[in-house]
Image (cartoon, rainbow, N blue to C red; front, side, top):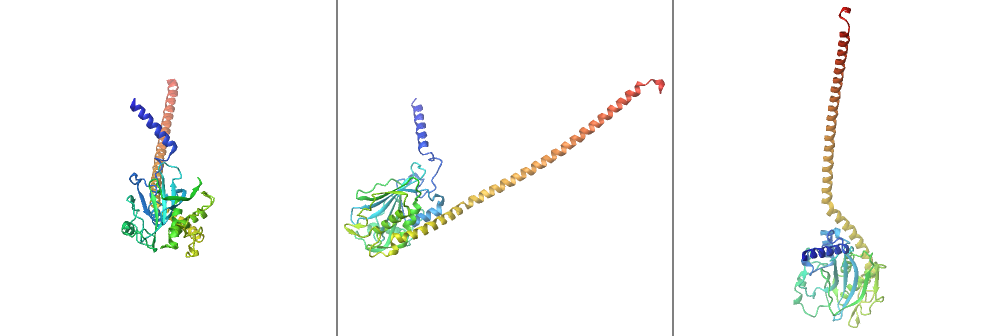
Length: 364
């Protein structure tokens, strides 16, 4: 009886899951960088940068572009000095498949004093290379050896951290502004990645007075607000006065600018760069899809060619068989005709003999 009850409960559970998430078993993730199918990494996070994420996506799973949709963006600020600011992007699969939700944290540090590497970090698909847009693996792994008083200038370390688990924010972190996107919004992780890359390209040098975490978070946030207008609800409606401040000192204003930041590095100017790069990235990803599909297309073409050849051979064999059948049919018709003629001759002969035998002998 217990076994029967368990089977019934199991059936009801899976029936309920199928109604809630009908694609859970039939739709594997295409963006395996964000929605990693490996259950062993669900409690881990991937620390890369926007450039590395976009590169790996295009190289390994281009068909996953657009699968990770951002549903909410939070502008975060630490209450501890130096009041670090960063963005949290809450990502989901638009098909509402259970288990496919994660968070991307976008932030900037000084490469001379990067954040301490979490024990739960896992590497990206490719080892990071030392260039102006890539994560410095040496600096991250040696973070504990740096002074607690970071340098005011240096190489920028821009992180695009993908959490494979729900993020529990620190009690010292405060949400200053929230963008909640509409259900039909298609704002993707790739778009956020291109925005972050545009900001990184605009200023790859860290400066405590101009291009620091305040500028980086605010310029990306402003680009999102500008380009996704009409697709989200903002709370609070007015910008929080603590944005861009270190303590009581305002470092960056609402336009992501200050006296030391050139006009070319403000969000108003970088929106144009973003639109151009986003368009180019979409073109490039379509080419990558074609490249990825090329072997499949060749296999499909070969299969179609083989099927066509087999069909031609079948039709030819059918025609040969039909021709042979027609010949046999003609032979049968000829034999039948000959039999009829022979039968007619026999009947004529028999009739003639009957007629001859019917006359009296004297008449002959």
